[in-house]
Image (cartoon, rainbow over the protein chains, first blue to last red):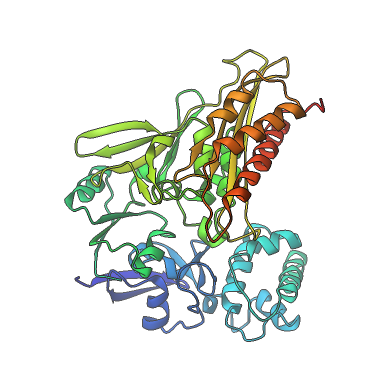
Length: 158
Length: 300
């Protein structure tokens, strides 16, 4: 099939790429834009490693076609850095040991940021629900939940 | 994935025309089922038509006196955020928050949950008990059918390959039409081995209209994952009609739900276990719907 020109806005910048209609947003991000912070895990929407924000909502980049991303504001984990500083959720994950092998971490961070943006004071149950679509095979989740909770509390105080 | 063309029409007529051009044209809404199925090779479209730019398919509109028309491409998250869905259709509100993860709910559409035609589709039993109808467009014009008539067999709808599910029409819940003091509510419950990210082994939706005298005036019950299609539970409904809201009515309804269920045994559960679950879930869903309508179950 003919390739098509797609324009996607990622982390506030418009990018134009020649895409096959089969290319997913994940492939555009990783292979064309070299934004490899977003990981490919299961590639069918179960693991959450590829979680990005689409107009502020957490979505799996593996289940979105490049064509569908036109006109949507995409935020990846790289876009959370402001003035060279990590997002508070990232700092909290480091501080509380909420990351081990690190493969799921970018997706966890994006789900947590989406949660805190819509609910600045989440309960532990709400945090667990919000990251239910993010599989971590290292940590057992306890330290992730604690880190997200502390990050939200720190944000709410500031 | 096999090669396909991708288009995103703005007008409903263009979606219907595109759908009619070839039998291997697939409509894309949230993509949480379709894109995964395309990757696994289960579905091999030649043409993919993204319907999310079509206003009729991506909006929720109020119609008539308290009815709602929900575009087929409206996401689970958008439905969950609506106060009118929470208030008037709490069973549907329950269901759309159970489908997959946040990531999935932010994309997955009500129309997709219907057209994927899984017997386990969480949103369908609540639509059945709320007397939902679906608006279907095709080359010969539009037609409207009851939601339960959409399903043919697992993964197959009764729609022809040139038809498009445009929207879902939810009439206002019955209540004062039954008697002036009547109240109504609904509930959906499912059982999954894991609390999140799982598929129902069985599910039950209940809609009750409770009269001023505290008895059930009208009831509808639908079951998930216990038949080749989402199932209306006729025997259970017959038990509930004009019955008192008592523990013994619930017990009889649970027994009837066992008879309504036509489950198979598969890798996820045995048929017997699904019958047991149908009994338990129906009783619990009745109690939740009654509670939401401001009534409790009498112990006798």
